Image (cartoon, rainbow, N blue to C red; front, top):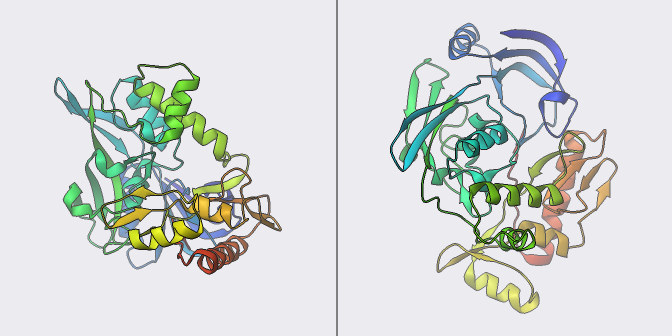
Length: 337
């Protein structure tokens, strides 16, 4: 267990925002976590995982609890399927690579997503046609007030688009300690519906791709579009892709013939937020050290010394302009504190 006071969180969030924590405690086991929760029962706590899906706009005047539980294992398997478990502090991408090294399929499209395993269900992370809920088996979480350990099944999590019960009804009530996934061992179902994946496979002359090929494609695509947070502070996609009614989309299509979309059902379509921001002329836009990435308009970046407030103000400016030009309200995907 690591305990510190008045330390900078700059190295604990991928935006690289320099805010201070009044008190910082890092735990590496469920036992340590329970002990800390018992000791800080009457104290407000701030849960910190990989720091990849958040924008910090001020100092944290409470106890910051860093979840550093690591470990991964095979729980059960049959001829065709396997259930694997990873603790909350495991790096997400390293865990994905571990499953691929074992030839377990299901997570390949989620390669190179920043952050840790424990925050993945909260956000219901997704990319290139796959969401976490597609392979989610269960997760274990500790209820902060009672220290009771609860097992959440898929139906308990109320998964939605970049959403879950942990972001809504049960926000701030539980700390996820481990997550289980049901993955394939044979007859892997490949998701190549996004054109960029197929384009990469064609360029690489791969006619019979496997799960590692899909992962390599996703990694190459993400690296070509998205900045490395170790080099340029960012939190990946800042905005959700808005979902609008088909009638609304058809009206927009008349005015903007090239506007892309992905069908949700017969009544709803998803419109890429990055396309809207790019079309509005904001790709590469910069205000001081807060900016929109030059290669991917969906990503806000910290060029060095931007504050969280400056990045938040930039996001408001983007939202206002998109609503003015397209009549679409963008919603932040990152958690803002």
